[in-house]
Amino acid sequence: MKSWARLPRLFLAVGEVACPAAPHWVTTVLGSCVSLCLWDPVRQRGGINHTALPHGGTTGRYGAIANDLLLQAMLDGGSHRPHLRAKLFGGASAFGDIGAQNISAGLDALHRHGIPLLARRTGGHRGMLLHFRTDTAEVRLRLA
Image (cartoon, rainbow, N blue to C red; front, side, top):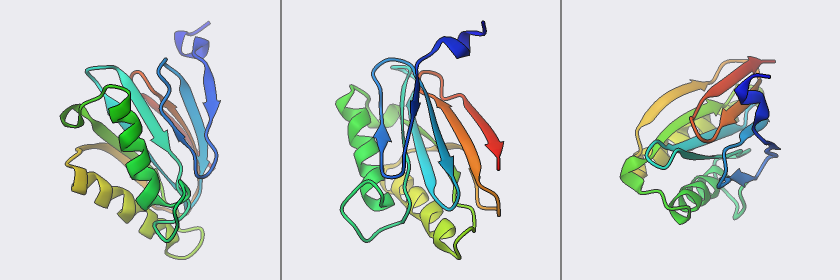
């Protein structure tokens, strides 16, 4: 059995934030939604969110809230902001320009907090299945 297959798996629904203390594969499905992945290479720990809209509410469904919730979860877990790195995924144009607005919300949060973006796969016209490994920041994508 491959070593990646032995890790616990967690499915992330819209509006959720996951920042497990132990290594996990976190899976989510994205269309116009966006997932921001944060990773701390010093602590070898990561977290991810799944946002549906850029702003306008007070729950994790909104990027303006979920991005800050994810950052706070990483800091509460012992990470230091200067160590954090990011990856951004999703934001397909499935529902007009919502995808592009979601991408902008993620990029704005990274800029505001000074977190560098290591990789992104955003936009386009197709959804994706995203698997994020929290201890290494490895990503596996499958386009829908």
